[in-house]
Image 1 (tube, helix red, strand yellow):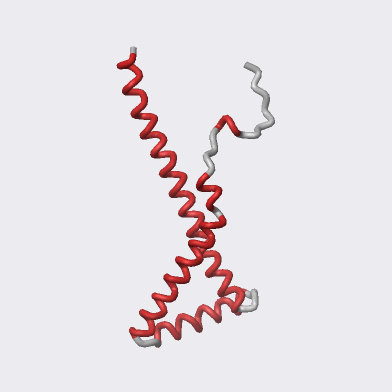
Image 2 (cartoon, rainbow, N blue to C red; image 1 turned 120 degrees about the vertical axis):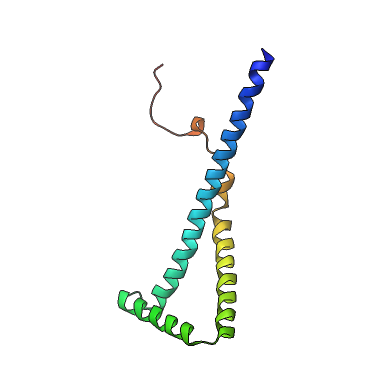
Length: 116
């Protein structure tokens, strides 16, 4: 009877690993989406919260980036990725509880009554 229980534990570990992997992938996707939204909000704020102003700011930014030398483009890329990493760390810090808490079906606060 003990031999029957041993193979059953292995698929549960795989299922748990898949569950945690999917939760982490979802957390990463949402956090990266928040960082992208913060960059968009930055350009919208530069454009005085109007669509036309935002498009003009993006066009101005793109034209200056393309016209810059390779050294300045590399420096900009370095600043961009450092700033994005800082934003990711800040958003990740505020979202850490959604990653660390384990939600199970038994802890849901459903108003349904189980009638057997």
